[in-house]
Length: 225
Image (cartoon, rainbow, N blue to C red; front, top):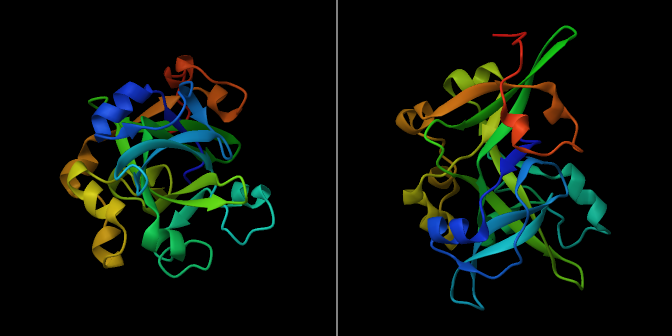
């Protein structure tokens, strides 16, 4: 967790929502983002002296890594250890970002049965996932990871982990860098958590080659819950 998510909004929509300067090419909408895919992110830019909308490869690659392949195993960073991790600590201290998402997917298994669920705000508003980024190699390839935390409330029924979601009031402090890790990494409060619903979806989302709004449609039959 989190191994798949959806992000379908245009650059114009994301720039407006996050009050960011668009400095990147338009990405196509994706209803099935997978590790190593290019994804939008929001970060502070010294060059532009502003919050910017940029693009990064999902799966953080530390500057000391031999090649980009290491990023496929580093799509997530645990909130409990990110501040002290060899791979993530420097990015957590200095290179934090917001990763826009419509929602994320998890699978519940019971014996041979497996049911996919989509977690998303009931009102359709975007999510800001807490993230970290790094720049790798001579090409300065931007890569990123999603911060995860222990799942809360009913969301723990589908997985024991969930993305760390940041409400707007916490964006500035997160993007600024530095600070005490404990308040930065605190989970959603109960009110915000209640706004996220779990929707059963069909099995097609399990194949990374499938991508389209039909992946969010309810299945013909729900086998679990």
